[in-house]
Length: 574
Image (tube, rainbow, N blue to C red; front, side, top):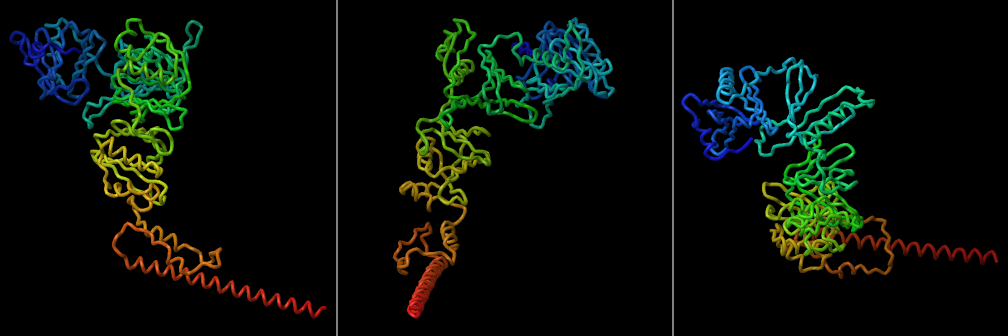
């Protein structure tokens, strides 16, 4: 498929460029497996398709670009034109009528000197058959007739989920309408048998997988990687993978699954020291997520030991190493260094993407790191304030750009009293992200960073300003908003005192409670009910102390009487 010059495109779209009777036009034709209708036109020297309502969306072809033409009936009243191009691509146009099929065949024969082949589709309904290859096209035959075909260029991954199964996953086109159906995966079962060849048994399932992998270009067959790393620990997807870095893509080879990451699908690249101080995380954000079945991986997370060193050979020529693209990353033919650093420099050079690191203007109040420990739902992890956004790792990875944030809000974690607080981020579109179980000591530094560096709007800004003037311990005693009333929390705790509670000091004065400073509350207005409750509580404590003292006096009196009786009895015995 080629994009023609403007003049050729206009000629094909308008039907001009040929003599009267040499052009033909067909409406309501769908192309490239999509549902958008368009117009298919042919002249003496060129033919093409234009999407309806898009003057500039024109695809044109010349006869010398076409290797084979097939016309087939795909439904009761619909025919398909299939073009096998010299480049190995396959283009399909659907929606032709039966009368159109004859016009198409005659036009190709007369003007393009190509004899179309009329193909009958296998419609027996069997789910078994044989497979063949035509170039990079995988064809599944039923009863000796083609049932469907799959082009290797559309395959994103080929795996063996089990010994006798082959799963083919396809690239997902995010530019299509969300209501359109897309083929995402096809699975084949191959009976367990082996073929003896040259004295060796060949497993058919493995052999077919290898052929598909080679034709789809999702392996290293026939290509030499720029560099290879073995047994790299991954957190997402979990496991150890071998990494092969090529000039246009990255291949991940695991024990069960293989993945391909094309550099053009990488939109961000992060290098984050972990909070434990002994690991470094490398995160790759993808425009087109990797897929394994129904699981999507929009982020790839690698976890390197910070002190692990390697020696790596880089397969680049001296001219390439000295180019601006690789020279600034200080790449050499033989590199020695920490594993994460070597990989980072290679990926930066191959993708031409900068590595995003934590902001140096934020430091944790608990540890000398640039992140804070917190939780997202049930997942524990760390939140990194960056120069242009927040990122939460390891799983799920959440990246929030500051420009997408509407506001943030702080609140105390319900039931945690003053030890932890919650940090909620409201983003455009109505979504929100809640990070809980944040230690109270991180509060001051986080608020300062959000106000001074991130420049974000804080919803409860008034309470935040008031809390900044107080000691950090007092901040959470009454300034942060809570889902429950703070005064009620403290009063409920006091009411749970047991009636049998022992008081160590017998000389406690009842007036001590009245001399103690009253606790400050957020509410400035008086509450008669609360005041009455406090008075009742004090009266209750006073009565309890009086009762306790009376009991002690009675016990002492009984003890003295008992001692006197014992002395009298001893005197009588004497």
